[in-house]
Image 1: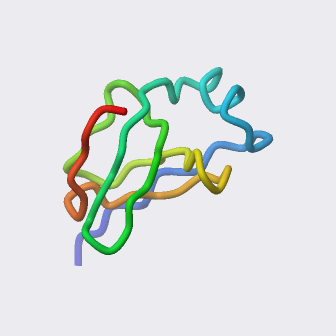
Image 2 (image 1 turned 90 degrees about the vertical axis):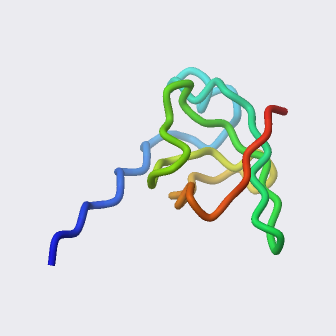
Length: 74
């Protein structure tokens, strides 16, 4: 079985300012029908893969399976 490891979550205090300093500068809305998330992502994040994002509502890091969501700019 060929599995890809999930990206490591950044170690930092959980604030939007520190997430932006870490390079998570693109605000997006991610919606899958059941959940809507307000995220900060890296500008070059591949939205069809698994990637790390900062959840602006819960002030926490998440690992997102991008193929499950529809994304729009915020």
